[in-house]
Image (cartoon, rainbow, N blue to C red; front, side, top):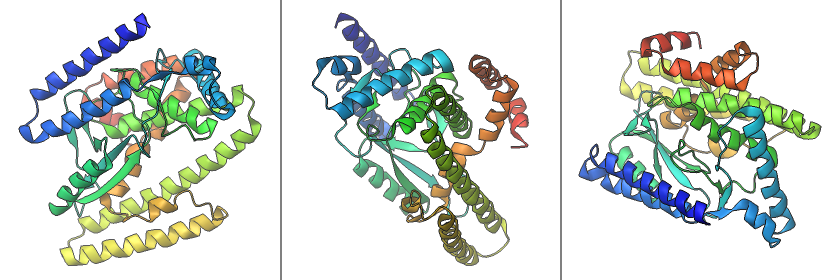
Length: 355
């Protein structure tokens, strides 16, 4: 208990430091935003329960005991086989008592796929603004819409504090299949290995590459042949979804660059949105009517929503190739990624041009 108290105290000091730094960089208008963020993080920090202690208590249901035990095995694998910085991350559980832990707001101009960026003292500039309450996110989104932006608000079930705090297993992800939970943990831990402030595409593509490779190795190591087949089908569907949206994203961008009136651009935009839905239905038919992406396609398909797909995946092929060049060694791979982060921006961007 003494160690946990000291660790919580140290992390509380970190939070105070972050808020103090932020105060020098923000206007009065955004003080409320940082306040809600601090309250949300504090609620998680003080709601934590030690997972091993919960397992040892003998008071868990069989299902939850099995889930927590699997998480402990995933943590061990992440540390020993993937060189990920596990430490005390995901050693605690928090019931946040809501559907999502945060809601992210994305925005883009009416005639551009390029998302709006928000800048923060530590994380740099990112293409979303996160709220610990759905109402707060929706209110901010409405304000952006009144300014003429395309807006997309989506619930997020987990996030990384980039090593500033010990990340916890949250109730928002506990119902996921074990292999999905493993992928999520690998993804979020990857953000603590390498992070390029101000570049969402770089950071999320890197974490996605680590997630996929880590999951592949985890399933092979645990001889989950049936789950491997399920994961491969899901991965294949995800790739097809990404390719479909990326292809249409380029078509939207082409329309926006045409020298036509705004009225014509709106008409072309609406027509492309309708066509994207039609082609999704055709793709879904080839999946035996798998409905995993129905909720996404039920939304507006505006520029802000389309930008969320590009942010997570554009550079995944680059990182996959870099991993191959590292002969599969995760430590060597991470060193290469951090060497790229240390490059001059123009040299780094030159590496990405073909992707």
